[in-house]
Image 1 (cartoon, rainbow, N blue to C red):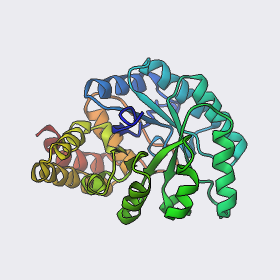
Image 2 (image 1 turned 90 degrees about the horizontal axis):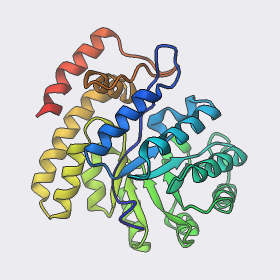
Image 3 (image 1 turned 90 degrees about the vertical axis):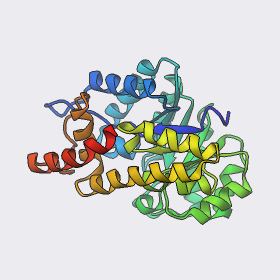
Image 4 (image 1 turned 45 degrees about the horizontal axis):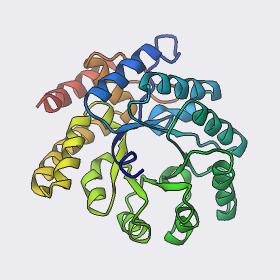
Length: 293
């Protein structure tokens, strides 16, 4: 179980065509490219996928297509989080029917639910399906900050296999891993991947793995081999690229990079801003030589 959910998981981007419809051909091309590059699996319908800008049917369409394109080759995790428990359960059941290995969910947000309400949300989902759940801990967006005691309410149940930890609180990550050494913890911030590994992460789910998974696969393997200095060199290289990307927007910038690489990703969905031609040129002129080397 642990091996299946360890390693490098791109949080798959959603390509759109000129009519703002999902481009499934480009999605298949991207997945094939990433599989060839050696990723461990895919995190589908997450934040990077612009999931909360997609319709409910579009989210289901991506889940179905990902399962078909993957064809059982890599581990698939579906982010099925919604504010509504009913909708989250429907997506979870659909992911299970499509053959996904696990579901994941951000905590229900916006209404500032109590912990007991959040807890009931998660247990209602796992009670509805027969595949495991990975908690998506992203307090900066969900507004829900899990303590070790809160998290233990889930992790002591075998149906909760671990946590996607998209938080700069690496002390909390270390505490989670110490309390539950048999669970899987995946780092969520690409720019601090190596820090996450050092504090107990078993791998990572990230946005920039869509276009530079090789760098992070190397960091992961170097860390496991105890070659920390070499891993640090690659993390610094990745961080230079990420710092440039953050100037323009992660999803729009990542799509521009992949399009330049031959995978037509199209635009980001409103209200996100697309890059101007000048911004695109500036970004590509800086990052493409770094990625190539």
